[in-house]
Image 1 (spheres, rainbow, N blue to C red):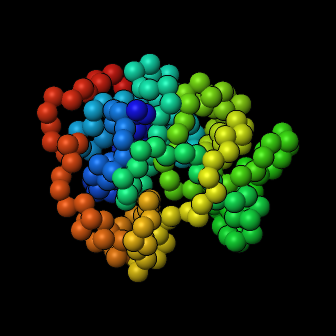
Image 2 (image 1 turned 45 degrees about the vertical axis):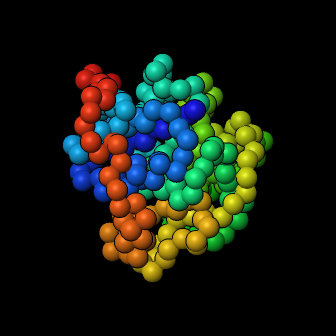
Image 3 (image 1 turned 90 degrees about the horizontal axis):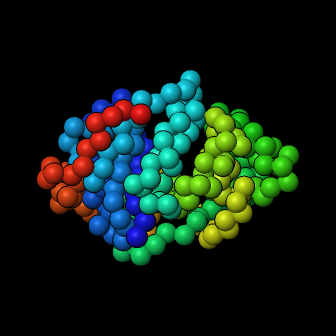
Length: 235
């Protein structure tokens, strides 16, 4: 079974979304749970990989942390890359690569946002290398092979949109599905949805936050200290 890796800001405070994301792992067959970066005091994963994140931008800090993850021999050679606002809603044996159409279609729908600028940049980078431009920037866990990820990090050092770069560089294919991000305070998933993702605003103030708290009321094993491994060295 694949390990689960969360990359978390080293200065994280609170972590309520992470708490409920961990509860939702009861629906996924997985190996160890790792938190790389920072970890809230009330969360006890199987392993913590403390990383003093370096870089001027969010993408540089994520890439730095991801590199440390991929260089850690104890983490499974292929792992699921999670964000702290990803939730598994249905029993799931494995998660395939998932994309949502092509980057050009996503770009058309977003206007001139900063995120859209990053998508355009990523599309241009991929096209210059004659690579595909599938949109892997979806809010769903992604299986990552460590050696392949390290090559992508070397090829595109500090670039945004790692998931898009990784998926298209290695032409991993996968399933074309809609994204699952809840963007409004009234939004909730459909009854049979397998995944959902929140934002800080929708989790705190929206119906989706209340929905997830009703859906996962019981504490997970990752909220109880019971001798799990803690790494003391900050990388």
